[in-house]
Length: 473
Image 1 (cartoon, one colour):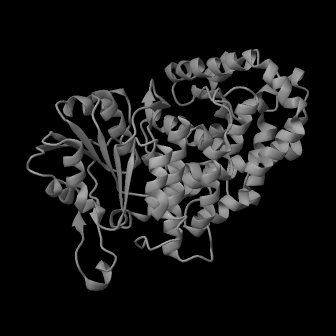
Image 2 (tube, rainbow, N blue to C red):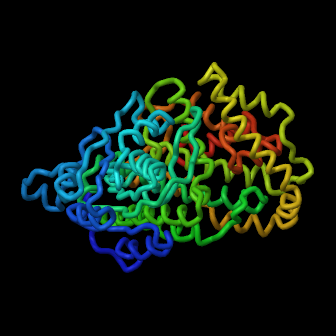
Image 3 (tube, rainbow, N blue to C red):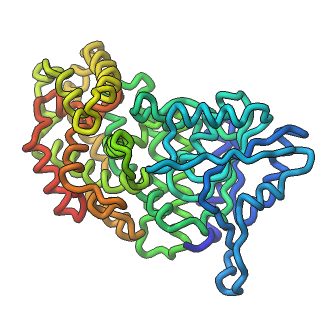
């Protein structure tokens, strides 16, 4: 993957201004080639003379100048660069976060251990991809100190927001943490990251084809208190085509990926929620992650799973709108299933026979449907204006084919069986069936459940449409 080159004024060189505006001054963005060498000055400015805990994980992170391959120069180690850049006035120590059987699980013990080992720091410096950055935001939040986050890959959009995906009771939950005081994106670092991380970032980015529609639906039904605001999705929708343009150079597509992911993170931070860019496709990935954690087995990168799930989610929307005609139902016919508790617990029993994970998810699902019962006035208003809402949703949606084309352009997986490790058809189908039974955020899957259409016949049709587009199982 090449280093980032110059772009139009709307491209990555406008990102520092966007960070200032969208974070309301809480986060500074430093982006460009070689900016890692200036990290010591940033730390000294934020914590003059203070102690620094450098939070990272075992894999080596390289720094490769754009002409390194041509000149035969060896790369540098990003951790060594960071440690060497810190001034002697800033005593530092490294907090190395161990990896488990399926990578780093951001569960309660991991967070508690990182907080304990970072005690006494005046500043946290995280060096890593999305998981380490999420952990750094959580540790800095717990200790009440600033965070300098050094992004080492283009793997997710979660670097540039004040939120962290953490594991509580075995379930993945998105929680408010803290903005990085400074986010450092050195293009010579992200260019040297393994290509599978960039493919994961593309998977996270293509969620823009489906997630905004889920968020709009929740807001219009009255189940998202913040309400829908176009400015929390439009910048990412506008940026995404640059990373998926087959006529563009590889360098320009990388520029587009940096912009799409960073803008995505910034607008989520401004919204105070991941909901604008996290719908059924992210639910799918979270469900797969939780199953793997419960069983103690490996799973692929979050974004890689999200990319494939976006193809399926786009197919779900098409089937729901065009065949089920979900927006044409009588709202009086929408009912929470009488056997909701049994269905939630049964959904999770195959991966956690103890029932603990099912109980954790049940609490979240019950909160969601309590809000549904309280929102009946808004629900009636939604269906009274169904044509207006149908048009708005269509404007926000991409197609399964668009997602497949973007993923294939980057060599990313379009089918669950092509993930590493592969997700076989029975597990993928189970994950699809579990979507309404995981968290408290309203999506299309919940509306289909309320309409009595969340069943095997629907799953068959959705997976068929996804396969016809070139993705799915």
